[in-house]
Amino acid sequence: LSRACGISSKFKPRICDACAGMGGDSLVFASLGANVTMVERQPAVWSLLENGLARLIEAAKDDPPLAELAERLTLLQRDSTLYLGECSQGAFDVVYLDPMFPPRTKSAKVKKEMVAFHQLVGADPDADSLLAAARQAAKYRVVVKRPRGAQWLAEARPSHVIEGKTVRYDIYANSAIPK
Image (cartoon, rainbow, N blue to C red; front, top):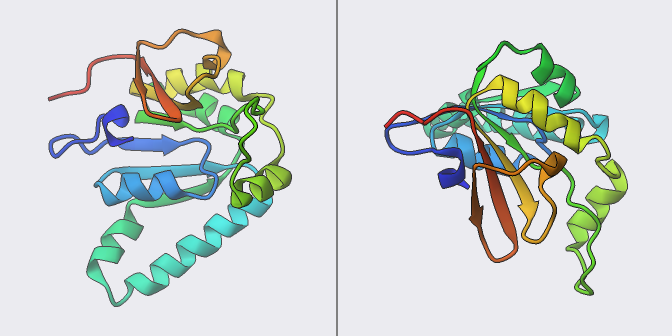
């Protein structure tokens, strides 16, 4: 995940996590030194994130490392396509997209917490339209998390792909990350 977003000891990007969900990936980015804007449109999920961020800020009052982590996280309740469309070109170094995965064809069941999350959030029928707005708002790259065998988002061929056992990161490069 950090490699896909280009995070290194020399490059701590400004990241927009445009499909924040439960905030796990955003927390990883912030713990690696990136400044992260989390965008979530679903009100119930946004409320959960807001509560978690408020508890992190409260716990950080007596813990300087947690305070640094909390300072790197910003939460917005917005539709990501609209938000990114309003951003200036290159507003973020990296835009990270993790839309709802397409329906599974395998017989293995999805984890219980993801079943509940899918029931709460529903499908992401507009995920394809998000890619164009993300590419405009990203200075260096857009990273899209997908199931390993899934179609490319918006049927757009990525510049580069990093594959894991179950997921892959499609990278749409706008320009090279500084070294």
